[in-house]
Structures are given as C-alpha cells and as structure tokens.
Length: 508
Image (cartoon, rainbow, N blue to C red; front, side, top):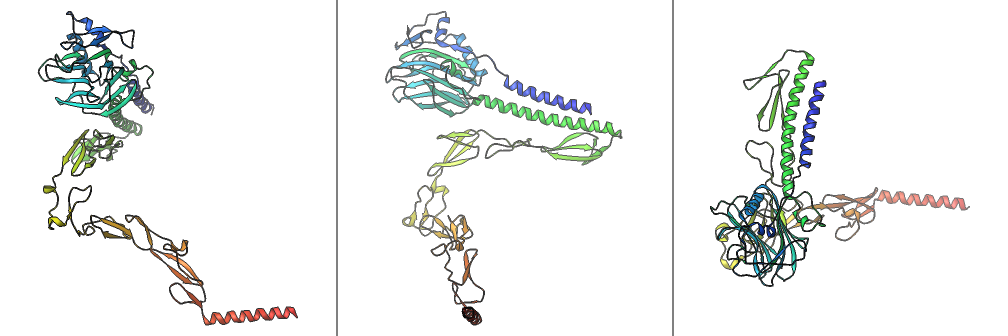
C-alpha cells in the first residue's frame, strides 16, 4: 500500500515539474540594431548621412541619395536570418520620418528581384505593407495608415505564430491572422538585408530612420514603448502552451496505465493468489497485462477477466473537430480570420451572390458558382423567371416553395409568396411561424386572443381553442351562452317565496 502512494506521489511530481517547466521557460531577448550595425562593415557605405532624431541617445540616418546601396554586413544578415528561423516571436522596430508622397521600403530581406520579407510604406496610397513568403509564394498584408507626412512615427510590427500586429506611436492599430511565414529561403540565391530600400535600385525610402531593430521574444515593442501594456499570452505562447498541454495529457495517460498496472500487481501480492490469465480473441494475456484493443479502447486482464474501458478525450473547443487516422480523440484545425470575424475549420458563408467561402485549416477558400451550370433547370420562359435578391439561382413565377420543403411549425400554415414562402401560425396559436405556441384565451376577455363566453359559463382552455362550460343547472343555448333549466327556475322561485315568508313572520 505504501508503494502505491509513492507511485502516485511520483506521478504528481512529474506533472507539477512539467507545469513549472512551462511557466519558467524564459530566455534572453536578442536585439539586432541595423543602424549601429552599419559601422561593422569593412568597406564604407555611402548614400546616407547622419542626422538627429527624437531619441538623442542613438544615431539617425537621412536617406535622399537616389543611387545609394545601403546593404548590411554579411554577418549581420546571417544573424538576423538565424533569429527568424529560431524564434516564433519576432518584432521589427523603426522610428521613421518619411517625406510626403514618398513610397519606399523601411527594411527588406531580398535577392536581386525576389522579396523574402519586407516592410514598406506607401505615401501614394497611405498604407503600410508587409511582404512575406508562404510556401515559397510572395504574399502581402496591407494596413491602411499614413506614415508619409514628414513627421516622426514609431512603428512596431510583431510576428507571433500566425498573428501579425501593427503598432504606430505605441498604439495597436491592426491585428490579423496570416499564412505561416516561411523560415527558410530556398530560391537558390543568397539573401541580403537592405535598409531603406528593397534592393540595389527599387523602393528607395526618402526621409530619416532611427532605432531600426529586430527583436526576439514576446512583447518586443516594449523596447520602443516601455509604458505599453502587455497582453499575455501571445499567439506563439498560446500555441506552445497548447503543445505542452497535449504532452501533459499524453503523460497523464501513460501514468494512468502504469498506475493501473502497479495497483493490480500490488493487489495480487496482497491477496497472495496465483496469477491468472485471460483469453482475448484467441490471444492469451497475462494477469495485469494492459493493451489497446483499438485506438479508443484500453483493456486489462484482471483476475482472469478482460476489462475494457473507453479512453477519455478532452473537449474539442471548435465547431467542426476532425478525427485523424490512428488517433482516438478529435482535434481542432486552424481557424480563419476574414473581414473582422473568426470562422472555425469547415465553417462557410456567402460574402456575395454566387460566391461561397469555406475555412480550410486556416485558409479561406472561396469558389464562384456558375448559375448556368449549378442552378436547377427551369421549364418556364425567360420572361417568367424571377431573380431573388441575395440568391444565386432564379425561380419561375408561381413556384410552389412549400411543396419543395419548409420548416414551418406543425401548428402553422405554409404560404407561398412571389419569391419565397412564409410561415403563419394557425388561429389559436402565436409565434413567428417557425415556432408556434398555444394561446390561453381564458386569460383575457374579448379581442383576437381573448374568450367570448357569456354569463352562466366558465372558460376552459384547449389546445388551439377554448370552450364555454355551462354552470351547474344551466342548459346550453349556443357555443358561448347558457340558460337555467325549468327545474332550476322552480327551485329558485320556491327559495324566494320561503325567504319572503320568513321575513314577513319576523316582521309581525
């Protein structure tokens, strides 16, 4: 028994260690200062001159020469590329003053004509562009914002997993979900790191730059804005946390199996019984042996009997979880972000007529429907066809929509309209037609929803209607009225005579 407690205690120590390992996994922040790195080259770089900026403690450069080629040293470029490969949290910082109407690159990883990663500001369109590659294809994410106004701005662009966040002057202006950014450049040419231009002759930035840096780890913008609030966890931290939770769950499953085996062995020793065996579909299993019958069932030989149980799965926090081969528990694929709204994998919507979009593992796939090929064939002439607003396929005038199927309540009536059908609750019921409930007419008197019972009656509610029940000793005249019977009238007369005699006697 003491050994059993030691095993349980050991398992708890392992799980707590894993949790603490997750929370204490903090590494130093790496910073590459691109302007400071210009002095590390053996050859003199021309095409710029030093100027003053808002930060008196660091140098700023003025870029106006149309023939410049500001290329960072090879060692600096290799170090920056290594940081991109090794970290899921990267922030690009820059303090910029761009001339009005200018369009140019702030920094860029590129070859002669190939863009691998670039941050560009367009003064012609008043937008900031983030160029990156996904599966060796160049993608661009555009953020409407005016930088080219000849004033200083602090810009921070953060990559955290598949999230990109843009901060300007210490305020978050955009946050989006993008495709996975490539970590390796496989186009066959060597990448270079340019400052203030895309390559040797394109996208020349006109203005001034200061504190252009590449920073690793979460919340890199704090180097630029120390007072800025932090949001924890970031996307990359959440993904790492999710992986840790999966590892801990697998560890928990393994520990549970080992504890089960240990308990059975201890129980056998405490009872001092001979070991028994089990037969499972012709296979002989030893006492205490545990095996997987299928991907979702774990069995154990206990006292000569096979006992099986289903594997407990954690809840899948998404609308359309999937089951992968050789795995029991469902998993959630990457969701999509479109027009300010998140969509789960497999969830679809129609942004406009004849276009259907579906989230496919983080990628929004949209398909256009050809009405001539996908819509049902109509037997009516063109002049009798109606185009329903918001619908891709036309219909014939006079179409029986109700016969084609409807979702009206059982206590409602389906009514055909010109381009659709409508549901109306039947008399005695109320609701929107898709859901109808009984009206209790006895709760009020008169009107469309009240009863019309006259005197000598009592209202009794029924499903969809009501009845007027006659009082005792009364006969029905119609559905709403009752009158007293002859016997009842005679009894009433005798009662009145008796009352009069009693009153007269007392008076005398």
